[in-house]
Length: 119
Image 1 (cartoon, rainbow, N blue to C red):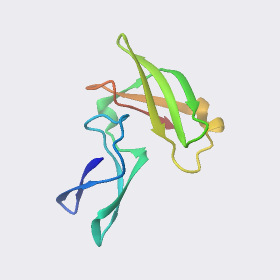
Image 2 (cartoon, rainbow, N blue to C red):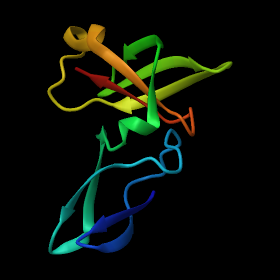
Image 3 (tube, rainbow, N blue to C red):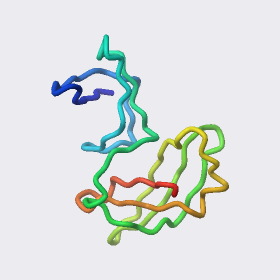
Image 4 (cartoon, rainbow, N blue to C red):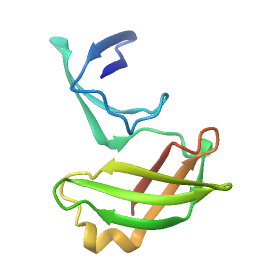
């Protein structure tokens, strides 16, 4: 997957892992960078970076933790469209304990982009 990031005022582009079909153009996540070799980086898909003023709260229709991974699957409706997304869970999240506190944020500009946060 081709990843671009800004570090110390410079834009870097590198290939990280395999293509991820669940991502949408324009999504942003925290990138952990080796300062001595910027091609050595890791995208933290459990930590989306977004401006909440460009998102609206949505209603989660279904939310489940996938059994064999540290990901969640969630369904929601925006307008007349049904959407399903996968999202990595942050480390040390007790999904069963925090599931009831999940909040959905949906992009006002592209409803295919959404994130579940646990408060």
